Length: 211
Ligand SMILES: [Zn+2]
Image (tube, rainbow, N blue to C red):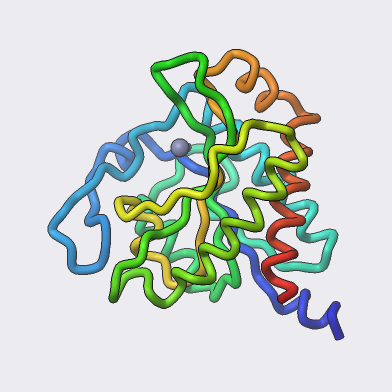
């Protein structure tokens, strides 16, 4: 019975950035009906895109092994959509959870740690999945911090993320560490740490989906 439920459940993974440059510099509305435009892909922190993809691939393998179905918005470089497209991709597949995988950057090289971003409440945009996204965010953040021992920067609500505002399914964005911090960047580039992060994401997703 549980295996049947798991088999029907789709997790959508969205490794950040990695967009074709001519697409990435285009603009798109930050939410349905909004006149506020935001760039599709500013490029991310230095080295972020390949780290995000590597973690996503490892997470996919772990979720598939647990019997879930997995879709990925990109599985290479040269992605040809914006964040609206990434959300629509997961919406169209009826994902039970969308996990956006990123790493952070700061002008202060001393800043480090993991945070999980979740949609802020906005009627008509996120009210259909606000509560579920918050619950998923708390579960993933707890697993990430417990597994990696990274500094806990908490769960943070965001109203300005295009990929949240267009989503109709529960969605979180994990900032898995700072590429601008020498120690954390080295960890994020290592296979062992990527696997730890992926394990935390798979366990957190499963905790969210089992309830
Ligand atoms: Zn990013």
